[in-house]
Length: 396
Image (cartoon, rainbow, N blue to C red):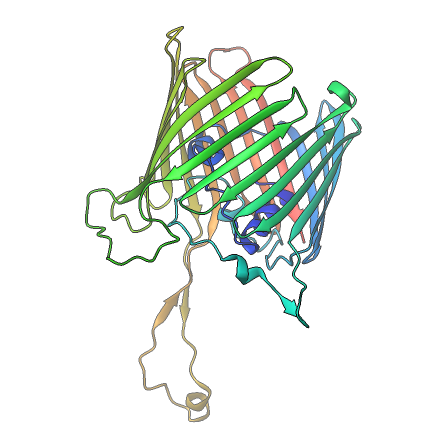
């Protein structure tokens, strides 16, 4: 389940019209959500608040062997029109699961951001500031996010810790996204790392007007995306490269939604294939196969998620005031109106070829969001439970 500050950060992306999922780093987001979810350890309690549309705070207290915690603050110049109360937030927005790829959105023009007064431009670029202090380690984490233009974003993140080389590290990331393709350029002071990655979406360009209707009657209606990343460490004189592709159905697809990815790291010889399908309205299945062409080692993972919905409560349409005063029924027949389905929780499970099992149950009880999970190793008959934990989140 997303932490409160991550949820607020996504609300900033939404309010500033930035598609954070249109990047190479999110190519396998669906498979990671279904197969690589973290299971909690020990007990953890998060208390958060969106005190105003511009300011948020969060306090965390955990117990894994010893008591630890953190204090977080966030400020944004852009007011966030979001409901952050844990008792009313939509669970599908805070629980990572199968993500339906959406149609590409046309980016805004630069002149749409201009604001003029008395012949002078007075518009400012939206930004987000975030800081988090971990206790008792005294580790400080900071984030500076700035929208430079409708198609560009700058992200600076830093960590200060005496256990790190030079006492900390800084990561600078410049993002450029026009819908049809996106690029990211990064630099890290940890090892002098320089990298670039990009994603290209095949099909119509959202920046151009559609002159003819696209047929959705085919067997598969979706979008194919391909991307790559390259990086080089100046201090250790080493580099890396990876390429990948993804096919995902779009909302207009008439069959079961599915997502298939293929990634390759030619230097290390790693080949990874994932396939995820939404087999039902509340059920998603996923598989992942890894293979190394040099050592011939392989790994297989299977996972699923099952959403539990609250029962629909029929709601009868009330009589009009005129009918009540006239002691009669309305002329129209009384009809029952069903409330939309609400999510009660989700159950996630995964297993690999070594019989290591991960279980996770996420949901809401009254005003509190909870995450209950466990890691099980079936080959350790004497102590199969490797870890078990519970996380509670409350926000106002």
